[in-house]
Amino acid sequence: MATPQPAMMLPRELIHDTISLSTKPTAKIHYTFAAGKDIQYDAPILVVFLNGLMSDKSSWLPVMSGVIRGKPESFPSLLAYDRYAQGMTEDRDPQDQGREGGFGHDVADVVQDLNHLIMQIAQDKMDTKPDQLQLVLVANSIGCAIARLYAQAYPASVTALLLLDPMMANSNFDWWPNPDSESFDPKDLPPDVTVEVLREQRAKFAAIFAPDVVNKEGLDRRNLADLLPYSDRPLLAVKGGRQPLLVVVEHDPERFALESLQVSRKSDF
Image 1 (cartoon, rainbow, N blue to C red):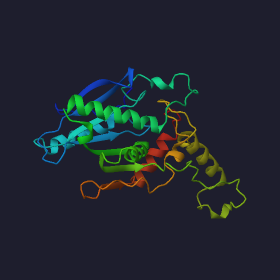
Image 2: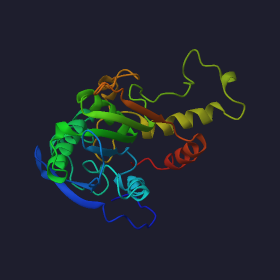
Image 3: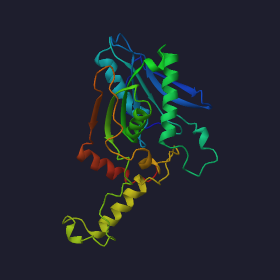
Image 4: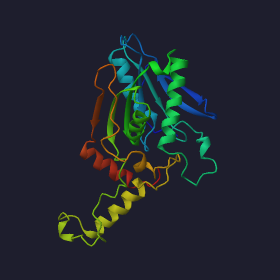
């Protein structure tokens, strides 16, 4: 089910529908789309919103609504979608059948699905050839890894990336000091943190974020560090003599602490 959101009136330009990818015709993906209006650029712009693991496309609806209402006479095309077995997309990824329980498709597979989705949306909803699009990818959490890998696979199509609280794709998320390490010294801990608290926090964090933890959509993250081994790559391509735009926005530390506390009480995502 979709993440509950505060009741709000959505602009009529936002259309909700389902689509079957030509490569996976037996499953449907739920998406929200708004056709752009009167944008005077060299090529049509499509802004694609990419979810994290713990949220779905409903979290982008206020943003999409704000873009439309901010300048209703002129805005780019907007697209958000729920990946397989996420949010309002009930169908699982067909290629997961027969794979190891809980570990199906990986981020590289998601990138291929995203590319097919963009191609079909461009042709069916925008009457545009996919290679003529200027893509702006707006992503959160693991969606940022998807955006980075997409830019690596299709560098000529990505004009800009906006990465909101991106995850460290080349990390196993074992960031906390290990009390079982020979180099560990309890004296290095803050005054209000005990070894017992440290062990508890390490266990809770690993139970949620470790790459080998199963998630509802069956997205296998165990090879993510191999897919994106460097934090400063891929480099975005120069298009038409203009440098690409990259913006990274970190999470507000106080809000992140509160959300982490709330999430740590729920191991199922």
